Length: 128
Image 1 (tube, rainbow, N blue to C red):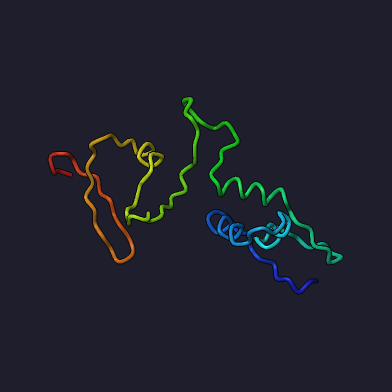
Image 2: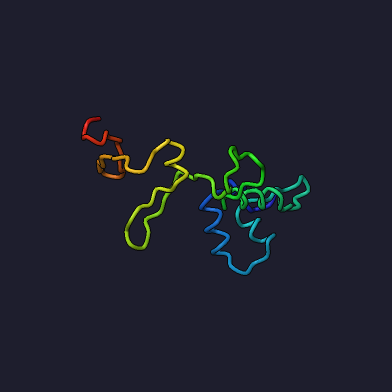
């Protein structure tokens, strides 16, 4: 056995950030550093490029399978994570509002917790 520990392969934002941090290294080195390798019984390390590339595609939100319903333009899939923008705003994308069936003018009450934000939909006339 090698002295490299078996690490869980990175996915999502962690994978994208690690690949970005690795800069100009080879694809194989990036895959290895992100945990996409196995070790044979003889101690030979094999990089699993296919799993790595598929994880990159998933992390980027690229939809290769034609699962879309209704002839939309495609785009990124919802990751259920948002990032605070440079102007300190949070933007909730159309993927989420479409999924919830929200319409222009829908109103929400914002409740701030210690480490969370709750949005509670309210009727336009102030009733719940």
